[in-house]
Image 1 (cartoon, one colour):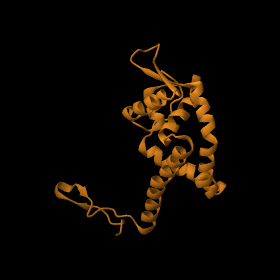
Image 2 (spheres, helix red, strand yellow; image 1 turned 60 degrees about the vertical axis):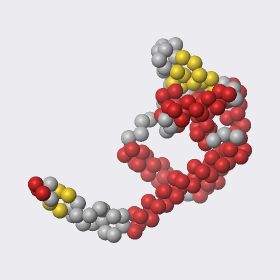
Image 3 (cartoon, one colour; image 1 turned 180 degrees about the vertical axis):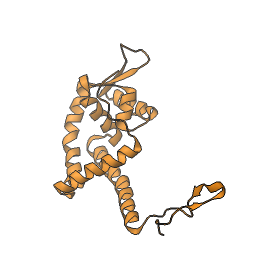
Image 4 (cartoon, one colour; image 1 turned 90 degrees about the vertical axis):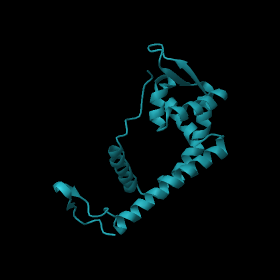
Length: 175
């Protein structure tokens, strides 16, 4: 199906497309490849983390986000942005991590309406023990599958798509 057709003028002189702008073969191939990666890569990363560390990929992302924050502390809303998850999903994950002693929640001293999460020493140790296997999986599935130039291109491509999605920058501080 050809995506090169011009829109036609409709009632009242408004421009309306004559038909959808279908993807060309090369566009469809690229799109389907991206969808396959977006589906299969998270599943593979999740499987490795569950098998080796008893963590979901989302829970691992929570630990990473906290480990990279000053004093290993972030407001829950900022942590939700970092993990690209809803506050509800994050709250459930943090509860599981709290039950294991890896994360603790507490009210923000500057704003009592805000709840912070902090990575405990036990949580940091869990992350330190888990990270090598996870990084090896990332290397195997992504980094070593691409040349240096392709990694640079991938970074640029991801940046362009994320810009269109209007993704806020990752948080770096607590409340």
